[in-house]
Image 1: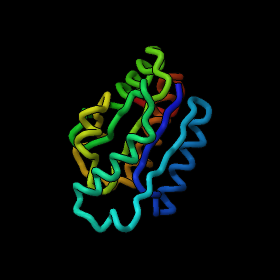
Image 2: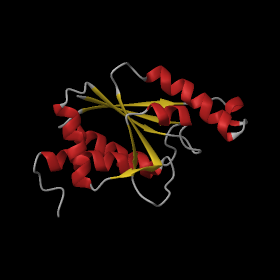
Image 3: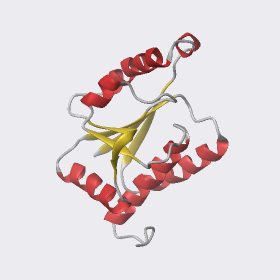
Image 4: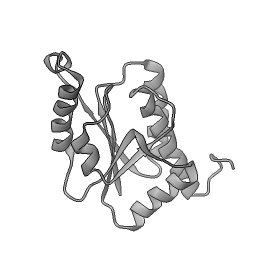
Length: 157
Protein backbone atom coordinates (compact mmCIF):
# COMPACT_ATOMS: atom_id res chain seq x y z
CA UNK A 1 0.00 0.00 0.00
CA UNK A 2 1.16 3.51 -0.78
CA UNK A 3 0.22 6.57 1.22
CA UNK A 4 -0.15 10.03 -0.24
CA UNK A 5 -0.47 13.15 1.88
CA UNK A 6 -2.00 16.11 0.07
CA UNK A 7 -1.49 19.47 1.72
CA UNK A 8 -2.36 23.02 0.74
CA UNK A 9 0.59 25.42 0.58
CA UNK A 10 4.07 24.68 1.87
CA UNK A 11 5.03 24.41 5.51
CA UNK A 12 6.62 27.71 6.49
CA UNK A 13 8.03 27.06 9.96
CA UNK A 14 11.43 25.35 10.11
CA UNK A 15 10.67 23.60 13.41
CA UNK A 16 7.64 21.92 11.82
CA UNK A 17 9.64 20.97 8.73
CA UNK A 18 12.32 19.42 10.93
CA UNK A 19 9.77 17.33 12.85
CA UNK A 20 8.04 16.25 9.65
CA UNK A 21 11.39 15.24 8.20
CA UNK A 22 12.20 13.11 11.25
CA UNK A 23 8.95 11.15 11.02
CA UNK A 24 8.92 10.79 7.23
CA UNK A 25 12.43 9.30 7.45
CA UNK A 26 11.27 6.84 10.13
CA UNK A 27 8.22 5.91 8.04
CA UNK A 28 10.45 4.66 5.21
CA UNK A 29 10.86 1.45 7.23
CA UNK A 30 7.12 0.77 7.02
CA UNK A 31 5.42 2.35 4.05
CA UNK A 32 5.87 4.37 0.89
CA UNK A 33 4.78 7.91 1.80
CA UNK A 34 4.72 10.74 -0.69
CA UNK A 35 3.63 14.33 -0.18
CA UNK A 36 1.95 16.57 -2.75
CA UNK A 37 1.76 20.26 -1.96
CA UNK A 38 -0.82 22.36 -3.76
CA UNK A 39 0.16 25.99 -4.14
CA UNK A 40 -2.47 28.56 -5.01
CA UNK A 41 -1.57 31.78 -6.78
CA UNK A 42 -1.97 35.19 -5.17
CA UNK A 43 -5.06 36.03 -7.22
CA UNK A 44 -6.90 33.06 -5.69
CA UNK A 45 -5.80 34.09 -2.20
CA UNK A 46 -7.50 37.48 -2.66
CA UNK A 47 -10.90 35.83 -3.19
CA UNK A 48 -13.51 34.99 -0.50
CA UNK A 49 -12.78 31.88 1.57
CA UNK A 50 -15.37 29.68 -0.17
CA UNK A 51 -13.96 30.54 -3.60
CA UNK A 52 -10.47 29.72 -2.35
CA UNK A 53 -11.68 26.32 -1.13
CA UNK A 54 -13.35 25.65 -4.50
CA UNK A 55 -10.11 26.47 -6.32
CA UNK A 56 -8.22 24.14 -3.96
CA UNK A 57 -10.81 21.40 -4.59
CA UNK A 58 -10.16 21.55 -8.34
CA UNK A 59 -6.45 21.00 -7.71
CA UNK A 60 -7.10 18.22 -5.17
CA UNK A 61 -9.30 16.33 -7.63
CA UNK A 62 -6.47 16.36 -10.19
CA UNK A 63 -4.33 14.35 -7.75
CA UNK A 64 -6.93 11.67 -6.98
CA UNK A 65 -7.07 8.36 -8.84
CA UNK A 66 -9.94 5.89 -9.21
CA UNK A 67 -9.77 3.43 -6.32
CA UNK A 68 -8.08 5.83 -3.90
CA UNK A 69 -9.27 5.67 -0.31
CA UNK A 70 -9.51 9.37 0.57
CA UNK A 71 -9.31 10.41 4.21
CA UNK A 72 -10.03 14.07 4.90
CA UNK A 73 -8.58 15.47 8.09
CA UNK A 74 -11.30 17.82 9.26
CA UNK A 75 -12.43 19.18 12.61
CA UNK A 76 -15.87 17.55 12.19
CA UNK A 77 -14.51 14.06 11.54
CA UNK A 78 -14.35 10.98 13.72
CA UNK A 79 -11.66 10.92 16.40
CA UNK A 80 -9.64 7.75 16.88
CA UNK A 81 -7.26 6.70 19.63
CA UNK A 82 -3.81 5.81 18.32
CA UNK A 83 -4.48 2.07 18.62
CA UNK A 84 -7.69 2.44 16.62
CA UNK A 85 -5.84 4.49 14.02
CA UNK A 86 -3.37 1.60 13.74
CA UNK A 87 -6.33 -0.76 13.23
CA UNK A 88 -7.68 1.62 10.59
CA UNK A 89 -4.34 1.47 8.73
CA UNK A 90 -4.24 -2.32 9.02
CA UNK A 91 -7.77 -2.68 7.63
CA UNK A 92 -6.79 -0.61 4.60
CA UNK A 93 -3.72 -2.80 4.03
CA UNK A 94 -5.51 -6.13 4.31
CA UNK A 95 -8.41 -4.91 2.16
CA UNK A 96 -6.04 -4.51 -0.78
CA UNK A 97 -6.14 -0.72 -0.78
CA UNK A 98 -3.48 0.36 -3.27
CA UNK A 99 -3.34 4.02 -2.30
CA UNK A 100 -4.48 5.60 0.93
CA UNK A 101 -4.73 9.37 0.51
CA UNK A 102 -4.84 11.76 3.44
CA UNK A 103 -5.89 15.35 2.82
CA UNK A 104 -5.05 18.29 5.05
CA UNK A 105 -6.99 21.29 3.83
CA UNK A 106 -5.87 24.86 3.72
CA UNK A 107 -6.37 27.58 6.31
CA UNK A 108 -10.13 27.68 5.68
CA UNK A 109 -10.77 23.95 5.67
CA UNK A 110 -11.86 21.52 2.95
CA UNK A 111 -14.50 22.26 0.33
CA UNK A 112 -17.80 20.39 0.88
CA UNK A 113 -17.71 18.49 -2.42
CA UNK A 114 -14.40 16.89 -1.42
CA UNK A 115 -15.67 16.05 2.07
CA UNK A 116 -18.85 14.48 0.68
CA UNK A 117 -16.92 12.30 -1.78
CA UNK A 118 -14.26 11.19 0.69
CA UNK A 119 -14.11 7.64 2.02
CA UNK A 120 -13.58 8.77 5.62
CA UNK A 121 -13.43 12.03 7.58
CA UNK A 122 -11.09 12.06 10.57
CA UNK A 123 -10.38 14.61 13.29
CA UNK A 124 -7.26 14.69 15.42
CA UNK A 125 -8.80 16.65 18.28
CA UNK A 126 -11.67 18.80 19.48
CA UNK A 127 -9.07 21.55 19.65
CA UNK A 128 -8.20 23.60 16.59
CA UNK A 129 -4.68 23.40 15.17
CA UNK A 130 -3.18 25.24 12.23
CA UNK A 131 -3.23 23.39 8.91
CA UNK A 132 0.58 23.47 9.01
CA UNK A 133 0.93 22.12 12.55
CA UNK A 134 -1.42 19.19 11.89
CA UNK A 135 1.08 17.96 9.27
CA UNK A 136 3.59 17.18 11.99
CA UNK A 137 0.92 15.57 14.18
CA UNK A 138 -0.24 13.48 11.23
CA UNK A 139 3.28 12.23 10.43
CA UNK A 140 3.88 11.36 14.08
CA UNK A 141 0.58 9.48 14.36
CA UNK A 142 1.22 7.64 11.11
CA UNK A 143 4.59 6.53 12.46
CA UNK A 144 3.01 5.61 15.79
CA UNK A 145 0.30 3.60 13.99
CA UNK A 146 2.82 1.51 12.09
CA UNK A 147 4.98 1.01 15.18
CA UNK A 148 1.88 -0.26 17.01
CA UNK A 149 1.19 -2.71 14.18
CA UNK A 150 4.78 -3.96 14.40
CA UNK A 151 4.60 -4.28 18.22
CA UNK A 152 7.51 -1.90 18.65
CA UNK A 153 8.35 0.05 21.80
CA UNK A 154 7.49 3.54 20.52
CA UNK A 155 3.89 3.45 21.77
CA UNK A 156 3.25 2.93 25.48
CA UNK A 157 -0.15 2.11 26.96
